[in-house]
Amino acid sequence: MKIGIIGAGNIGGTLTRRLAALGHEVSVANSRGPETLRDLAAETGATAVSVIEAAREKDLVVITIPQRNVPDLPGDLFADTGDVAVVDTGNYYPRQRDGRIDVIEEGMVESRWVERQLGRPVTKAFNNIYADHLRDNGRPAGAPGRIALPVAGDDDGMKAVVMRLIDELGFDAVDAGRLDQSWRQQPGTPVYTTDLDADGVRRALSEASPQRSPQWRATPHSPGSLLDPR
Image 1 (cartoon, rainbow, N blue to C red):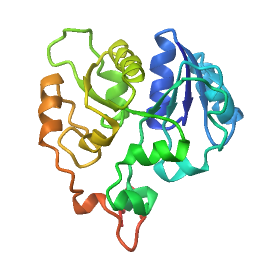
Image 2 (cartoon, rainbow, N blue to C red):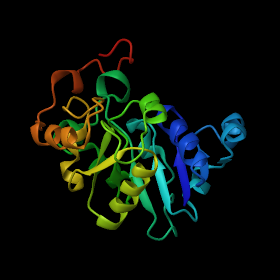
Image 3 (cartoon, helix red, strand yellow):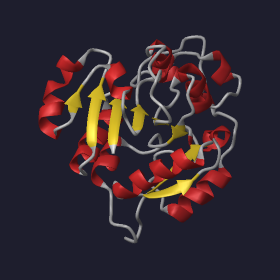
Image 4 (tube, rainbow, N blue to C red):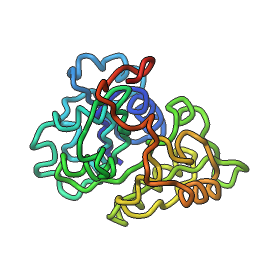
């Protein structure tokens, strides 16, 4: 597949490495420009491009940037891109990084907010696993204890594309329902960073509560930092 990755941090860099190694045609972009991605491109064989170029003529585009930066993406990012599948890997970290986003604090699920900023349907995936586990812990299909990843979205065809890709990467994919159910895989829920197998993911999703715990809600002093959340 032709895959564009917007964001080259922990998850974006890991997906660039893993997907390029699997033979996909990967283009990677960040906010600082392609010249800052030369080392990653040389290491992986991916192509460093601008943010706009990362969305052009692709089968799938991954948005993997801090939540607070999503509104800063170009307004025409997905102009003339057809029915490209868009994956949101992001999480809302109000106390640690993003500050307060009112509509999310009031109950809108994170990826629905992202979808509205992009003006494009998104599929939620890759948000509940540590980057080094995504890099190192893939296993062949059928392997005992194979880690499973939840996938939520409204477009069944796009969701199926993402689920096949997850299988290629060495993980089981679990259908987590529609995008409005993706709160079940947000930070603080039982499936978040717990490396469960498929049965465990299904159980964890069913046990999730829609109420955010205090550590995942903004305060009047937010944001702080990952080391000093506020």
